[in-house]
Length: 286
Length: 256
Image (cartoon, rainbow over all chains, first blue to last red; front, side, top):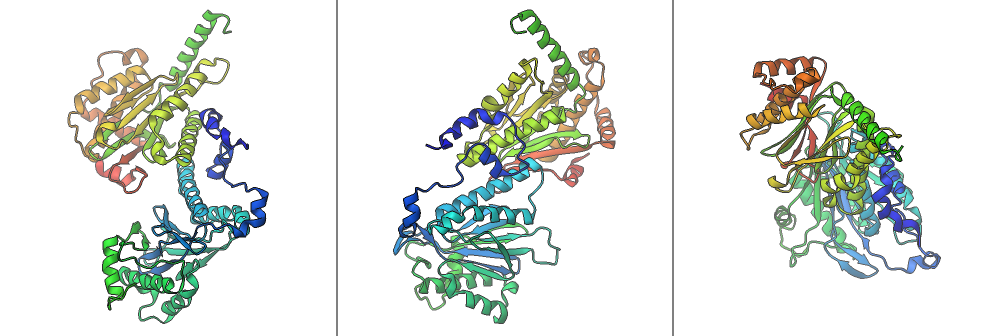
């Protein structure tokens, strides 16, 4: 057995020797032997691609008038089976940032949790907020550390990190969208980003709307942006079996969150029901 | 030395005298509850004294800055790891005090060949309901004192007694708003400051009464080379984290 079992014991006694981790939460976790990585037996590595692991599907982020809006469908699949229809793929990390995840939920949730606690730990120990660049690098590091799992085909995570930059000028939209690759490189997307298996069906639409729509994405208000995003998710679910639409019978709506200078807000199911009525005026099943 | 009990006890006495002498001039800290949470207040001299430990736990202390920093890191690290490994709801002041801090303080104090911590720590924990709010004071020797509505830490016991007796007469309204609570906290701080500036023998005397004008003078003088610092744990704060430092504007607005 590895020394992971010592973790609880170390919490009881080991921490009394105070080590200055300089705000680095991953260092602190390593110091107490928290198992950050999953050790796979070698046979799993060889047949890794045959293992059916739950995967999440379409998430989309757009920059609108007040900041950024992030939405994700609720379906988690393993192979051709739907294993869960209420998955949360848009996770709040701190007061002004959210992570939208696609890929393996287990790893994605752990990345989100480490990220959330890392930001808090930095603030509490160093007495200042982690900078925007610092936050982006922390996420890069977590994704890069996960590369072996991604290569084995069972733990790949491609997130979108969306936040509101409080350092933005008053007349400027502080909403920012960052897209990551599997190695942890981050790229700033200007007006939109989408990832997951359903994203290929809507990426072109997003570009079209962003450039040629009646109201360009960055000028939309909350209502317009929500309706647009619901229609996009509906389109993705039409063509991608791993993306769910709106389940009217069970009243399961996508997760839609906004990040503005005031912080992160979740659009309630009641509001989403009203927006859906507008998004689908003909009353078609979505 | 442990083989010679008398010398050990003598060494402990010397150590106590030394630490208390070092603590005497420390700027007191006042902890009060108000209608929307808890507040910790002091007037610092440049160095920050009120800290966030976890979602519902805040910390302040008097003592040597290096010791405060080391023990602050200890409690922050422990709370962060516990909150991550289990859930943030599993982090509580009782466990941090009794399983981590108190025995660390005691051990350092009684290991007379090692360095002692020059510190008195005050922690506040916002409960789920008003009744469960908790202030915990940990003395340098590991002794723990717990209160639910208000508490103080000062350089000596006599200073704390003086501040407590002022609070007992002045804190009549149990449903104060933040402004009234800040004012009460500052007045209590001024009582402590006044007592700490007196000679030790005078501190013990009964004449601890000072009027409001004197209090405001003391606060005014302290603000010339220091700054009022106040942190709150607010029930109204959205999200899990309840701590925030008050802005200088908020503090200014609360001043009479």
